Amino acid sequence: MKIYNTLTRKKEEFVPLKEGKVSMYVCGPTVYNLIHIGNARPMIVFDTVRRYLEHKGYDVNFVSNFTDVDDKIIKKAMEEGVTADEISKRYIAECKKDMKGMNVRPATTHPLATQEIDGMIEMIAALLAKGYAYTAKDGTVYFRTRKFKEYGKLSHKNLDDLQAGSRSLLVSGEDQKEDPLDFVLWKPKKEGEPYWKSPWCDGRPGWHIECSVMSKKYLGDEIDIHAGGEDLIFPHHENEIAQSECCNGKTFARYWMHNGFLNIDNRKMSKSLGNFFTVREISEKYDLQVLRFFMLSAHYRSPLNFSAELMEASKNGLERIVNAVENLKFLSGRAQTAELTAQEKEELATLGAYEEKFDEAMDDDFNTADAISAIFELVKYANTNGNETSSKAYLDALREKIMELSDILGLIVEKKEEMLDAEIEKLIEERQEARKAKDFSRADEIRNILLEKGILLKDTREGVKWERA
Image (cartoon, rainbow, N blue to C red):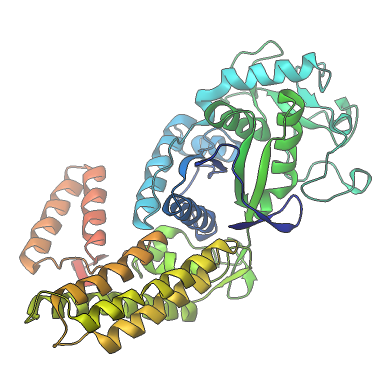
């Protein structure tokens, strides 16, 4: 199995640190709003990587954090007149709902930055003791970037060509820095902001130190795979390497994986362009399995263009697989014979070729686009060969193989059981009562239950209308 390593810029044979085990860290979202489809891409991609590694027999320790202290969270809290903690907890819960809809499995551990402050203070103290960091007059702690001789090895940037700042968490008093390239490890509190006590000042950590500490605590000083969007390569991941390797004296991560950007109608996604979509908004029009299928229809390192046309194509592609599974299930229920015939046994022996093609694609740097093509070939075979005269065992074997390969990609290809109209109306009535009682969490819960069953609710002036997705 080969993985493209951003560090070496080439595909490398995957050899884990410990035989049969994989340690994997994926940078998670900053929770100040509903997640957008740009957040969804790494979630889906690296969930699929994890699933495939587990399919190969590896025991995967998968860690993905939530950044729950940040300028954007604080800003949102101030706007709403609530605490930053309330904002982060609300949107972590909402994020988990969307992850469930996309069939993204929960991580082995989802650490929260605010719960790991002690570890961050310890790592910063260690970097200070080793001379890799220094404290400014106001208590800000900076990392001495030039002291780490390999700085720039991930992003392949030359130190002299770099400009300070970029996505670092900057503070006032930049003239305190020994070097413009030095970045913040700890910064003083501002009025009204959450803060923690430290030996240097009351304040909070810089962004980069958070992931270094959470990776070390839950996976160890050296890990197999560190992953995230390509926008994190510099400075976030570059700074993580510098901090971790200077503190721990070991290679931080052996393989660095980064997914490509997501564009909307060939333009960069941004609120100012009005082409910014949350996963929740997409779920109102499509089953989130369609979004997952769409994300996996291109190689994870390629830029991906989101458009209505491509989502419709993904919907049709997924339906093709779902319909094949449903048809095999229907035929199986009506099969006249239970046992395999001699010819069917021979035919089933050839199914290994489709699985082999699937595995070859996934072994080549997780080429999900080619893996889906292998599933389509299997679907075509099943549609051609499974019929009214087939045995139940043969039809079931075809259906199970399609479902097995789809499941490795996290695609749910069994049709959801339809709800009866009376059940729907009863739940809508309960939701209306909950809203009147200002029990909005129950109202939202009912909306999500219906959404999972393929029922879209629309609140209109005339009342609540519903339709099947």
